[in-house]
Length: 226
Image 1 (cartoon, rainbow, N blue to C red):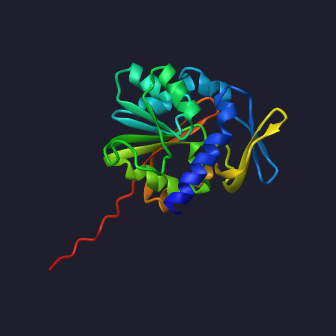
Image 2 (cartoon, one colour; image 1 turned 30 degrees about the vertical axis):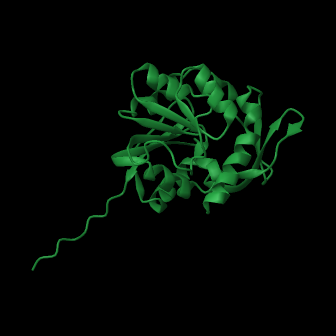
Image 3 (cartoon, one colour; image 1 turned 180 degrees about the horizontal axis):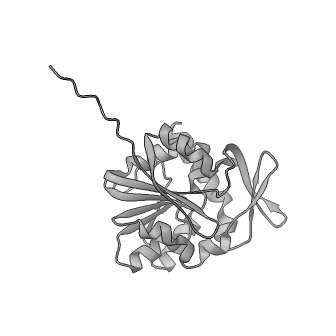
C-alpha cells in the first residue's frame, strides 16, 4: 500500500467517523450486509473497568493509534504515565485537547512522534480494522516500538474469523461514504500476528471484550559448530 493510498484511506475514515465522534449513536455497515453497533458512549466516557486489562499493561511510554476522544490517553496521563494519542480526525483531537489528553492529528501510517521509541502501541475499540489490512497495520504499529515493546490489541470477542472490505457509518437516516475496513475475530489473531512477525504473549477478556498483547517473534537460529 502506497503512502498516498494510506493517507487517502485515513482521511476517508476520519470523515466517516465524525458523527460518532460528535456523540451520535452509529452503526458500522459492512458491504456484506452486516450492521454492527459502535460503542460511542464508551468512547466519550472515562476509561472504565473493562479497559483495565489494557491500561495495566502500559508499563512505559504508550501511543494510542486511533485514539478518538482520548479516554485511554487521559487515563494513562492521569496516572503519570507518558502517552500520546493519534487520530486523523480534527474532531477527535479537539476532544482530546479539551479533556487534557495529548494527541496529534495524523494518519497512523504517516511519520509519528517518537517513532521507534514507544514501549507500547494500542489498537483498541476495533481500530485493528483501520485501512482494511490488519497485518500491515500490525507491522506499522511494531515499527513504532522500541526493542522489547508490545502491541496491545482488541479483537471481536467472537470467533468470527477475518473480514476485510468496505464499510460505512450509519447515523439515523444518514449514511456516510464507504472506506476500507476490517473486522478481526479472536480466532484470526494468531495468523495475523504471525504474518506481522509477532506472537501472542498474553491475552485476556473483560466484560465481553477480548484483548491480546503481541510481541516480536524471534526466530532462534541453530548454533553452528566448527
